[in-house]
Image (cartoon, rainbow, N blue to C red; front, top):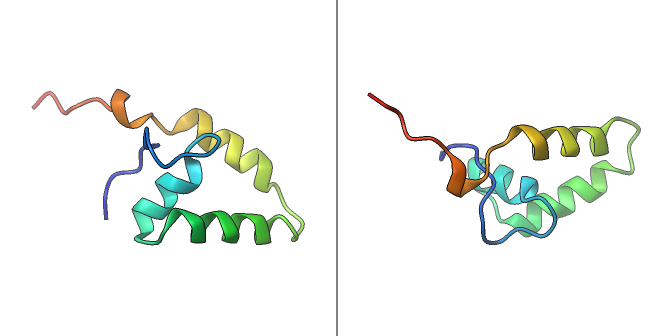
Length: 67
């Protein structure tokens, strides 16, 4: 599994679904469909998406370890 960072390519809005897909080894399209289907259920899906958009670093801005 790779680190959790929003990719600079293969993103549609914020890159959150693409980052999750890369992390769990699925395609970005599959993750987007799963997200859209989860929106049919009650819950804070959009708030979670926005929180991950803010909290996840962009792929080009991830800091390398100083050690």
